[in-house]
Image (cartoon, rainbow, N blue to C red):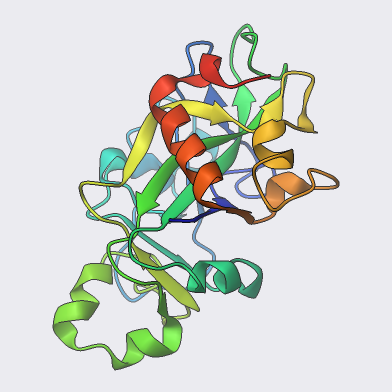
Length: 235
């Protein structure tokens, strides 16, 4: 069993703000905007059940990827059209884990595990229901197998553009209730030991934008922390 963690969700570039993380470790997952034409209707920010004020972008369609049923999606799916992410994701097999982390703004007083302004946090994961599917493989799948990805944002694009598609199992995937911190309390740009000791990343430079690979021990540690809560991370 191995894992890969990738950055997702709203940020200061798209749509101009981050989702919040609260003192009890709960958070709000906010997708990025949809930037390309779609064949099928997609939700707008105003359609999402959010407590964050999104009135400034309420009419903008969202790129709801990763898709979580807990946040209003139909299935656990993810697609990517960028080679830097698609490469490591294409290597994942059934039973491996895909972790999603987001940069989130600290709302209210920062607890001991959170940086004062913003930080990077793991917000959910998929346990792969099948081997990763490349874009070329998807095009040759029978209709019955394509159906597992029908609600994915890249499948809805015109034209379809994913280089890789991931399907998460229903019983092994979830959007977390509380975050797993990847940043040190000293600041969002300071990587903690989950990054520097357990992942393939050095924690130098803009690590919070890069894919990270985890071996079996690192994957198991992240999965355990998802249940333990943010206070359990060794700082």
